[in-house]
Length: 134
Image (tube, rainbow, N blue to C red; front, side, top):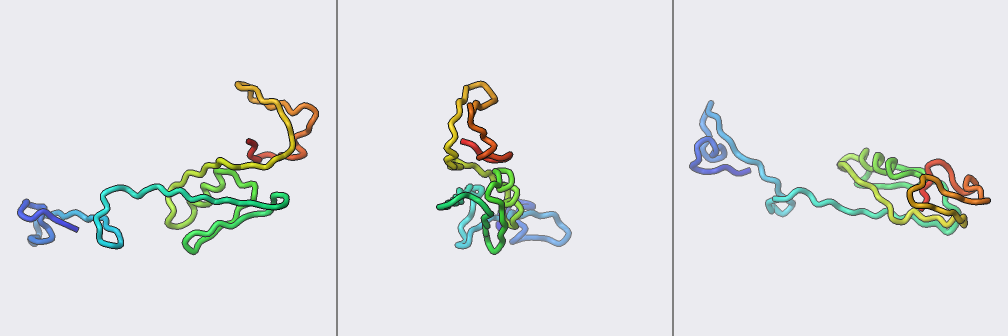
């Protein structure tokens, strides 16, 4: 905390008077007593899962003595909600650049259309509702 010596009503730490309004400021400091002037930096954490067989089951995420378990098919929203439920974790943004599973299926995709043409292949043999397809 700090005040402004000699400035009326802003010298509360050094020159406070009974029943008189006065002010002082609280400073954010790090573990080494350095003043923190900027907001916290956003961190990037990477969670990578791999398998040598068929994808399945669940995975656990632990942080600061807390943990949660998610189904292997969990989507971005489920991961965000689970992370934000941990104490000490604020708002998070989850992204993915590598949700990959070679299905062996071929399809035709046309820009501007909201459908994918799989031809004679039935995609439901490989995909279910909520699967990420890239």
